[in-house]
Length: 143
Image (tube, rainbow, N blue to C red; front, side, top):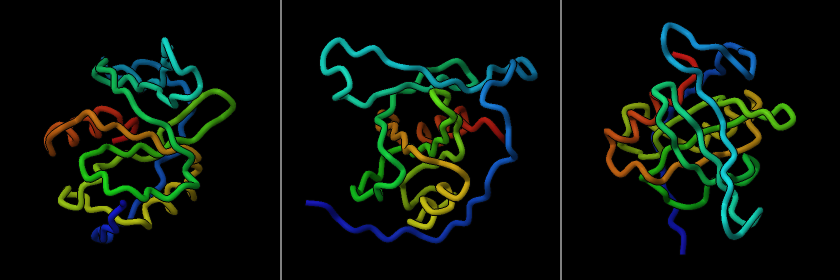
């Protein structure tokens, strides 16, 4: 059973276009996508990982951006991702909680698609609002 959740309005903007691979900037690492090698399940488990600017690794589930986020996952970090062949680039990152300072609504998906996102990566392992905010800050390749 899924619940319908109304989120407050938030306007997103497309980040400045950047190359998919960036060097170390000001002593901080570039955000990087990593494939996960799953012992069982193969392609049945659509999992990847992102390594944040801090060097921390965040495991994500991968969904097509065309699928509307139907579930009421209020405790997740949503990552809109563009692709160029096998290379992936983060277009936008946000806390899915309606209580987050940024707010959230369904229009964000359309805005991210307009910015080139084709995949939605969902990180469910940050258990508090503070942890989700820290993950979002670490994964934002633009500030």
